[in-house]
Length: 454
Image 1 (cartoon, rainbow, N blue to C red):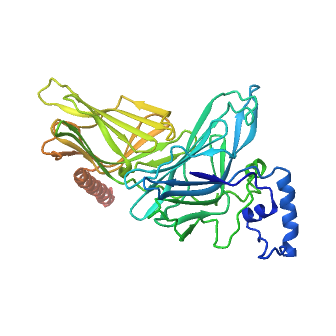
Image 2 (cartoon, helix red, strand yellow):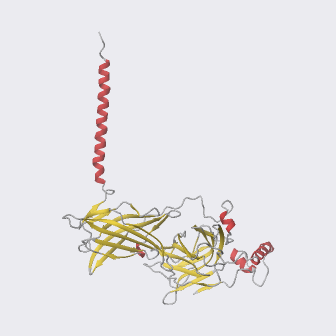
């Protein structure tokens, strides 16, 4: 059940709690004199409607009514939208007092946890969490805003829900630790700035008890105070804002994905085997690398005599399918190859399609029928200008699998180090011949120089 603070945070006491100011002492004593001007300023800001966001607290229970996912945070959204006059306006979308959390999921070792809230006139926000043996972290944030809400989007040209998906910037947190971040952080994508502050969250709660161990965000110190939520002005003014998390620091490179093992069955027999690490590169606005987590990914598809399709669902928002065909099916010597790759991004909240890309003109990963194809090095499949699929440690056999094992593998040229030997030997011989020729020419010139006309 979700719980909320009652009403806008307008009182001085609530402001002092929100922004880390000292609270009144026990016994009704007044705050120290040094805090009075600060509290008066907050009171003025509160009466002017500066603080309109509501704090939301979500406590997700499992089947035994024990807490499995807990979060309490504040957020708002700065959105630029187009009007009917083709101008662009800035607006601010706040959490309302009526927020639901339908669709939130506890998660487990094979399924991601999902924190989802719905508010206002058709707006929703969600984040999913995945875990390893030691840590958990936020994966993707999905935000949907509805421009039919005329109070927030007056005279909007585009009507209806608009969904964006961004990679979460949360760092891995130790299991059984609660993540805390008082300071303001924000994520920007597609004319939307998502702003968060006063965040407390723990996914995969153990034994139904919120941990007392804290993992702080980098912007926080154990005694740091929460920051004032930003406005459109101080977010768009890069020279004065202190909200950007170290903008001059180079982004941390994304590690290679874990390798997953997938298979399909036809009746009781395995008909397709695949071992691969997958990474999706989405570059519509800015490059975004998405590692497919094999622990949360399920395999489905079809097997046939001349066509086979492997469909992978990462359990969150990504579907990837690979279609293999047999070429020259009537020939005595037959080969298979990868012909088509399809990538679909979904809205995790309602399952609707956000984006889809397909390329059915591949001619890759070819091998003789009855054998397998292997390529340990990284390969790139270009779906279109916005989507790429990177594969690592690939081993695939889509036809004629026997005894649930891969057949003899045909390795890709990237892995075949044996071709380097003749290249190196040939280069050495060419160099030696060049040296001999040069030495011969120099020797001939010296011998000619020794003869003089009598």
